[in-house]
Image 1 (cartoon, rainbow, N blue to C red):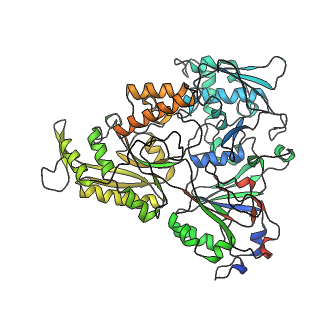
Image 2 (cartoon, rainbow, N blue to C red):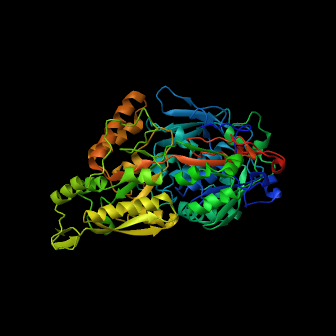
Image 3 (cartoon, rainbow, N blue to C red):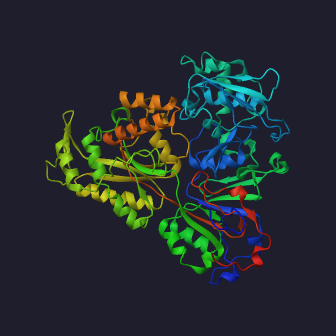
Length: 596
């Protein structure tokens, strides 16, 4: 969603102007500083170039790393970034030829080379790299050939057609071989060797030695060991409080002509400030101590938009995205040492019928959220299966299903029970939720209350972001409230929904059947849109019938950007606000802007 603006993008650094009235004031010097304070709710798991999965991590990488291709936020299409043009594709769809741009240069003055690209792909493919959750995306890369005439030209050879053979390079940061592999260890081995299922640390001790160094957490936490092609570098990280990046002097992008949105780096410094309390966020905005955010609560933004001073200082909007929230249930509890509570589809359907989603939307999102029935968000209009009915809130039907599944209150304590493997088990379990997640916490509490009315006892366990996902990845849960950050790209369902992704992937709940796995495998290699979309809708129906998730809603982002910056635009695609494109308006502190 583009907003009317002074001349483009804007970032939120909230400071109360004297001209805005009210009791809260800020210094004029703060308003004239070319620093953006960006509000978010959780810090990254790490900033390692390969070993991490969180959305906050990916946001920071847009500033600190470089990618072969990027997303054009205006057209929602892929565009060349470190390469001159989009690839030439062979007739059989198995070879993709790129040519590197001439300008990209590493911080030590070394020019980006094809060897850096090859090293980066091998690092992702290497079985000893701690990136099991993303490694499957690179399974199909068979080889990378350097052109015999032009050493800046290379061809990526794949084993089969794949819907993301180009898009995957929008999420693969290109790393400097001379920095991460001084001995050129990975050069000694072919892509085929890294694809060998028999590859072990014992067989390749030199790769083990390389991996032990490469996987070190210092490359994901310590600013002294951060290295990338992006225009910013990490300068400080105060755990659970804030993370700061600073603009590099004389970066290669500064000399580019006709820059695209993602190539601009106007702010000198960007501070990512963690605030989880909605009231605290509102206060910071009223004081103009935040410059940008798209993590506001619906009620917070609606209240702020009634404030004349806020409207004078900020652009704000509700805007769509590709994310959704859900409640996951453990379908393979025995393998994780848990009680088998949700292995019966009737129980899972009952859990969905007991979720007061519409009431939560009205109470906490003021009706701004959109419900969904499947693993595809309605924002993807051509792919979303509209034939799937939203699961209603129906406690009586839920109770009937629980009865049919053998869960009944046989001892009069108001908690259902059942004999499992000769032992009477109460329907009581642990419900993981993320602390400081705002509205999510209220939704979870309301859901737990409805479960209890139906004879099911859920005990909420709140964990901070990193611990929450570490616990879920190890399958140490019965039920949890989660969310997925999506994109406009063709969807590869393997990582979340294929049974092979139970360990090492993102299939935390353990879903998967022979039929669903086969369909996912076919979707991944079907390039014809009509055929693939029909298959995607069938997969949605399979998942809907099996109900491994309680699908909650897709919640619009609620954004605000301070008017002291030009280029204020909100986009549905990540990162939603291009902070590097926010350009300070000189002398803002002396101006008296009019509200829109």
